[in-house]
Length: 388
Image (cartoon, rainbow, N blue to C red; front, side, top):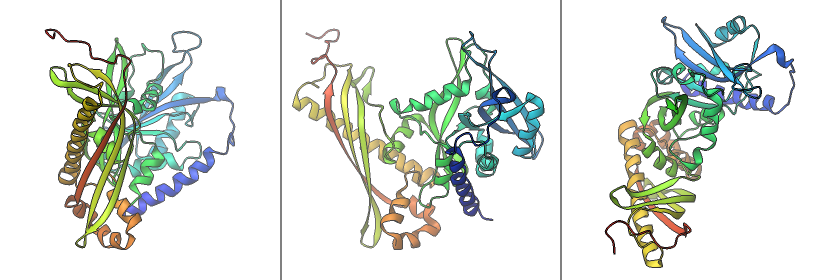
């Protein structure tokens, strides 16, 4: 069975899984006989041909007070995921309850080897859910991310879930559920990206940091893209829901922060002299939220100049990530091929067999429109030192 067929089967199983998750408590068990799984980390085992599974489980006695919960971890290695899951019943002393798991974290080593065969066990089980987040560890192992120091009194997987829910205010990383991942790797003309998660520390407590993305060829990871570049990938994928667009910075005039209220990207395939080209147009509505220099942002003329600067930056940054995708990875992470497929199915039929190579030479033109619709409450800028 080839790679496309395998991931197609995976997508079908995920659809079936969704039916089960909507059916309510169809297989009720007493809560005190179950151990609730909060998160999952998957690494390669020490021995060749083995997988290491680490689950973070909810620990009702580990919190800071009676109303809190903590967490503990169980790690086991084996030849298959299902074998390990069953053996974990012995380790935990009870059956594992998977429906409340918030995230699956893959090590980079596992992701590069192929994610589809690893998550197959999860999507087959009738007690799991298809809306779990899937991420790639930026640390050496996935287990490192879930290794908490216990100071926060909260499962680390729950905090990862909260970070992902608030990611729209930053837009430095994609937010991907396992169903979306399987659907994308099964869709011709678009390559997957997954968020990267790192271990970090805040006020002496272990936490997680999510930034940037992992780039995939079907289900195999090829490399990483940093948070800055990922933001403009999300612009091109029409997945920007909020965040900040910066112009300059500290001691780099104009030092302006524009808050993104909404953004819409249109991708149009066109035929020019018999060759397919892509035309991208973005329209972003913003407000001025920070001005570090004495810049005119409160008159129509001043706002028009800032809008022009922001448009130039957007075009430049989007062109840059298109070049990265075309030259470094040869992967259509923007879904241009999918748009061609939908608008020009006959043309796509001739392009699909070697789309990666065709994509690497695809001509793409980018236009950006930025509107400033509001500013902060102070109408005129605060004077900086030395100004009269």
